[in-house]
Amino acid sequence: MAVEREFDSNYRYVLVAARRARQLQQGSQPLLKSRTSKPHKVAQEEIKAGLVGYVRGKQRSTPYIESDAVPRFAPHF
Image 1: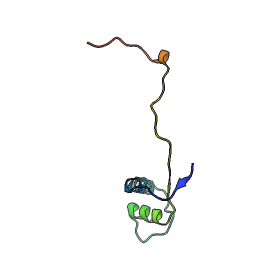
Image 2: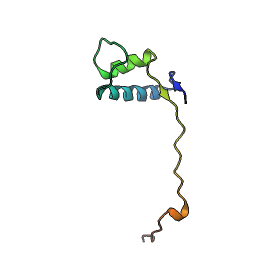
Image 3: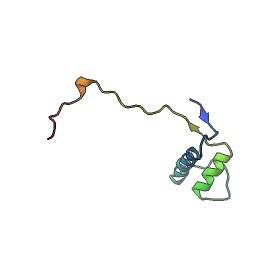
Image 4: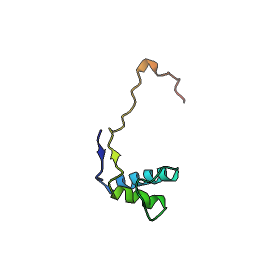
């Protein structure tokens, strides 16, 4: 899987920035020197500098459970 640096939507940009800001709030070190100490601004500057990206994963699928492994219960009326 490749790290994506270009954002295909504003929604994805906001998700990545929010996750990075959360990391900064929890004690992660900034990747660049910034004039501000606000985590959301630092996260946005890191993204703009191309230091933060995301990995596009596969879509989630419904888990498969074999039929004999599923417990059977009496229907409720």
